[in-house]
Amino acid sequence: MNVNALVEPAIQLQEITFCKYQLTTVNKNIVLTFPQLLQLRTNINKLGTHDSVCDIIDNDNFVLLFVADKQHLIYLDIPQLLSLKNTIDSFFSPFKSVLF
Amino acid sequence: MKTTAIRKQMTIHPEVMDVLNEQIAMEMHASASYLAMASWCDQRELLNSKSFFYKQAEEEREHAMKIFEFINDAGGAAVSPEVHNVNNDFESLRDIYERSLEQEINVTQSIYKCFKKARSVDDYASELFLQWFVNEQVEEEDTMRSILDVFDLMEGMPLKMIDERLPKE
Image (tube, rainbow over all chains, first blue to last red; front, side, top):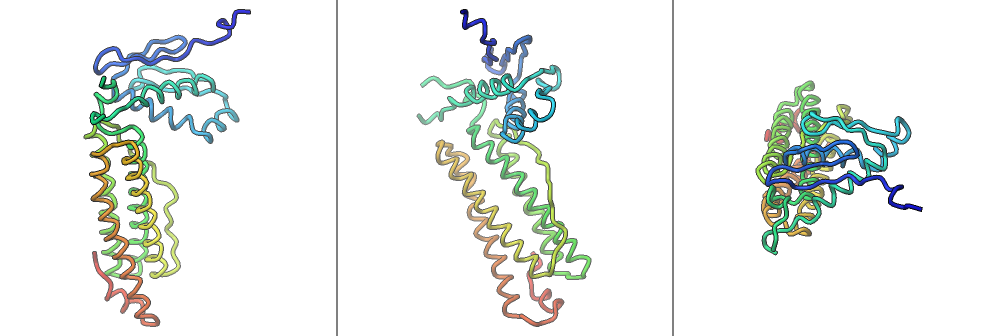
């Protein structure tokens, strides 16, 4: 059995230049500025809370999310939403103070 | 050390930014609460209390703006908060001041939470910024306690007479 075939391609986020970032979803490559990335983080953190996820499951079971100053609209089911939340969390987690 | 992409963009730690955004929401809620209290006093011609609460409402908003600007200046994203559940229904003037003290204590505890977070992630700039708020909260709580002392001392006196002995700001 090909295990890899069952695994959906992960949502990726990478730095392209000093102030440009690229979000790669299942069917889109979206270039983000840093303020747009911060806005995406805020929106995803709001959607990714326990109450919000339960609410999404009880209703449509997916969310449509505007990204990059409303230039893109992305569809996220629950696994994709959680995957994007994890991706953004880990992108922001290796923050280190200059004093280290 | 290799500086990360995020660190190049922002001085503030993302987790501190999150708690400070919560603090903005709390300060704006406090401002709205004080406005409701000012309105209650204004309708009853309690002139000193009215001025006091209008001033408090302004001050809380100034606190929120101070944090708001700090987050953006430090490379983060300040979020304009939604303000829900503002109580406009009070039993008495004393009830209003008791609620005010409770509110100030909650704000103090929330500032401590931000301070603790900044310290735990070594965000020294935010920690220093928050020191002003720590001192400010000591003053705010003291003002409310002093006013409640006046209520105790003047128990049984007419409300207008008590109001005349309360600070305007």
